[in-house]
Image 1 (cartoon, helix red, strand yellow):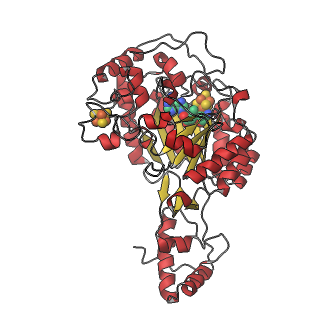
Image 2 (image 1 turned 30 degrees about the vertical axis):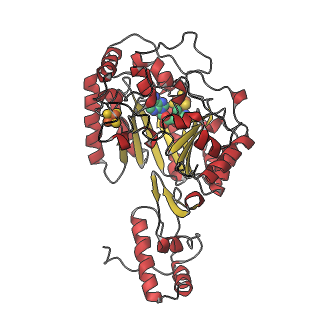
Image 3 (image 1 turned 60 degrees about the vertical axis):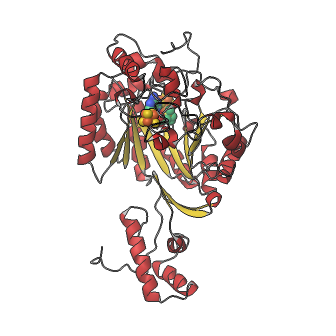
Amino acid sequence: MSGEAPPLSPAVVPRLPRGVRFSRDEARGRFVLLAPERILEPDEIAVEILRRIDGEATLGEIVDQLARDFAAPREEVAADVEEFLRGLNEKGMIEL
Amino acid sequence: MNDIPAPIGMLAELTHRCPLSCPYCSNPVELDARQGELSTAEWLRVFDEAKALGVLQVHLSGGEPGLRRDLEEIVARCAEHGIYTNLITSGVQIDEARLARLGDAGLDHVQLSIQDVEIGPADEVAGMKGAHLRKMAFARHVREQGFPLTVNLVVHRGNIARLGRAIDLAAEMGAKRLEVAHVQYYGWAFVNRASLMPEWPQVEEALKVTAEAQARLKGRMVIDSVTPDYYARRPKACMGGWGSRALNVTPAGKVLPCHAAETIPGLEFWTVRDHSLADIWANAPAFNAFRGTDWIEEPCSSCEIKASCRGGCRCQALAIAGRAEAADPACEKSAYHEVLRDMAREDAVQRGHPYRYRTMKTPTRDPEPVG
Ligand SMILES: C[S@@+](CC[C@H](N)C(=O)[O-])C[C@H]1O[C@@H](n2cnc3c(N)ncnc32)[C@H](O)[C@@H]1O
Ligand code: SF4
Ligand code: SF4
């Protein structure tokens, strides 16, 4: 767990680095996160986060949207999103 | 085609033309001529059909894909479809500006092949003076422009003694991944096996060097190395199963279950000029010839790992055992395993055969058949 890491700034703009692609896999009715030699199948929540990462939206905006769209407590959403993004960041699949 | 799972990956051999002439090249001895190549419109249609079929990754290869002027257009079309694009290149053809254009078009990943760690032998095998230094410059541009880089090194008798240093070079080049590709004896490599086959102790040493480097470079560079067939005890699972995960389109549009499948006589291949990719995947006789495990015979039918192994490589079974349905001779249980090893031992002690460089012209003498 990265419990000691300082919280991410809400102004951070998460981005997919070159070489990582988030894409709709119509033929199999799912979304996929494509990286070198890897195909990940993100779960429903991850898909909702990833589809809001467009290289412009800030972390704060993404959390706001999710909290609103799913009528969920903002604090909780923020914690989930942060944990998810940090995990991908450690694998080099998200830039923060 | 409901019960046939859709393919994940597609190898698109955009052209067989190449500025280099590596004697180990796995391309067929009879290369597709430029006049026969698919047009831009045809390739774009193939990628549209690939997306609809379920392909998620394409490997743009050849020959040298950089020789296609429409490479940017092809990459852009794939990106539009959300298909992951991997450019497999010799790196001598694509300059910094063109690489940037490919990046703008949406290129995701670059795989660069190198011949050696030393300039002299590298350029000699490539058949081009200055090739090695151009590759080093290309790798710099790849990293500067932020692409993930894989380096591919084909290992053979001429460079196996320098493998350790070549691995270090790949790490210095900034590769995230290195493929240590012990030469596979297809195409031109088969013709040249008397000059490419390393000796047994060299292979043993190479495997040791690789394992040591894997441990040392952990976290910095992943090293994928496949044990050479004649040295292995079990075959490699070919293509993740014949007609199950991937397909290969040749420059002229023929669709193959694997890049060497054309060596198997009697198989009927369809082309994208006559059929859609989905039709080919589901119905082309070549794809159905070895799908599933029904065709499998002993010793494979009673083998506990047949579901994953599927008897190994059909092309090698044909080349060595004389029948495409046989177990891959790379397997210890194959009756031809010793034949494969003996061939390797014999080739390894051959000397004095000059390289026969890859060229577009059909060589005057046909490669001798084996077995
Ligand atoms: C046929 S080449 C075509 C693309 C490009 N010209 C290049 O060399 O990268 C595709 C890949 O196969 C590798 N390769 C070529 N011949 C091989 C062989 N006989 N066994 C294993 N890999 C081989 C090359 O190093 C390269 O990474
Ligand atoms: S392996 Fe060598 S000869 Fe073959 S296509 Fe690649 S660069 Fe050309
Ligand atoms: S017996 Fe056949 S299925 Fe079993 S490992 Fe050998 S080649 Fe593969």
